Amino acid sequence: MPQSSLLIEGIGGIGGVMAARLIQAGHTPTLVTHNPAITEAINRDGLRLIAPAGSEEIIPAQAFTTLDEAADSGPFDAAYLIMKADGVVAAARQTVPLLAPDGYVVTFQNGIVEDAVAEAIGAARVVSGIIGWGGTMHAPGVYEQTSPGQTHIGELDGRLSDRVRALGTVLKAVTPVVISRSIRGASWSKLAINCTINSPGVITGQTLGEMLRERRVRRLFLHIYREVVDTATAHGIQLERVAANPRLLYLPRDAGPLTVLLKDLITRFVGYKYRRIKSSSLQSLERGRKTEIDYLNGYVVRQAQAVGLDVPVNAALVRMVKEIEAGERPITPANMGDLLAEAQG
Image 1: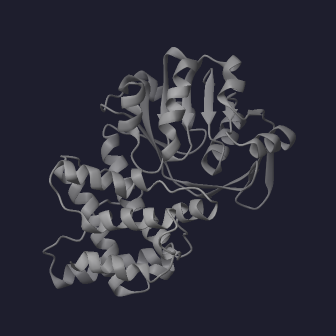
Image 2 (image 1 turned 45 degrees about the vertical axis):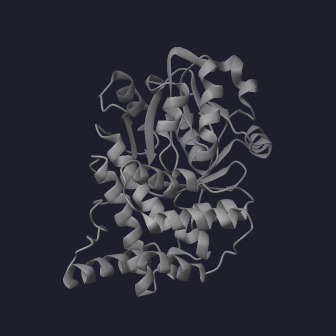
């Protein structure tokens, strides 16, 4: 049954695929792009969805550029926020006045934004979402799902509420859905992967495959991952499975040589299988935008400080990415040497 008064903000790679699939399933979401070029393309040509076989489906749709333009379509029962993490708090504040009395927002960001959004608009208004699949926008209004996966959703307090069940029913039109009783554990699992893969790609400018050719870099990746997992553990958070077992890449500090070898082999396999992956944060920089570092490794650093834990490699990554954003450091593979020095210090 179509969900009434649904708002989707952010019609980029993920938002565009989601909007197209929901419309195909009979839903009538209001689309807000925050980008005039995307609005124009959708209103002129519809949502163009590239199928796995390469064929293209055209889904007629109407889009708005700003929330003000879409206000008459409300009040909204739910608003899916699918923009960059650094813009989600402002978007949530602007969206709340357009929600129905029991309306809520769903956060679909890289990194952990739920705490900040809940502080801004109240935890009762927030449902957490995790995208476990890939999507890209080839051109304004032209979308493709680039990898399979699931969408994870859950209440911040772990309840299996009526609204999260209804949300799951709607989102099944897009991908398989997992309703989690521990969405924070799932969020930290995805955070660990993002911190380990995304941010090193920013400082080196390399693909995942290029970075993981070197054994010392593979050890560094495992070090970054361990710092994230140790921080979650210190907060009493048990990581949940999202794409794979979250302990698969965990290398204990006191690991013996056989465990070290096994984890290195796993990391080599990951580097080969996903060798073409290019950091989404690097792509943001190439488009002249800032990264989401404050909600990725920066979030880990703040959470580690709160429990007196030292996470030197994640802290160094934050510093180096901010130096790159400020134009004070070039993007080069040589940056990996500075990061390795932090790990050995």
